[in-house]
Length: 235
Image (tube, rainbow, N blue to C red; front, side):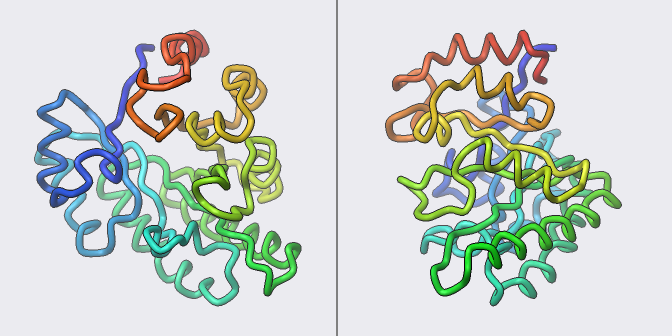
C-alpha cells in the first residue's frame, strides 16, 4: 500500500484560521490532515471542513492543556482529571462526525509535588477510562513518547516506556504514535525501534532534526525511513 501523508495543521500554516489551513492543505495536494486539539470553537468546524474539502481527519489530539505555556497533557495531573473526563466525550463526538479513527492522549509532565507512582497510576486510569469510551466510538487512543529537551520532564520519553504504558492499560485499542523527530532526539535507531514495536504502532509522524523542520532538511535519512515503512506495509 502506498504511503499516505497528512498535513499537521498545528505545524503547517499555523498562523492562519482553520478554514484557510484546510484550503492550503487541499491545494497542496494532501488528502488528509491531523492536528492538536484546536479548542471547542474550531473543533466544531472540523466536520464541515473535512466534508467541504473531501479531507480525511487522520488524527486528532485530545486536549493537552495550554501547549504554548508548557502543558503536555492532563492525564497525570490530579487537579485536571475532571477537565479531561469532561472533554473526552466532546472530542470523541467530533472524531466520529469526521470519521477520525484515532486520538492522541498525551500522558503529561512529571510534577514533583506528587509521587511518581501516583501520577503514573492516575494516567493509566484516565487513559483506560478514555479508551473504553473510544472503543464504543470505534476509535483508538494513541500514546506518544515526547523528547524532554523540547518538552520538559515528560512522563513518557522513550518508545519502550510508551509501549509498556500502553500495555499496562489492558486495552487493545490503546496503541502507539511514533514520532520520528522526538525519538531521533531521544534514542535514535529509528527503523530498529519501529520493527521492535511494529505490532503496537498505529500512527507515525515525521519531521527532521535539528529544528523539527521539513523532512530532508536535516540529519534523518528520510528516503531510507520511508522506504522501510513502506516495506512494512504502513499505510
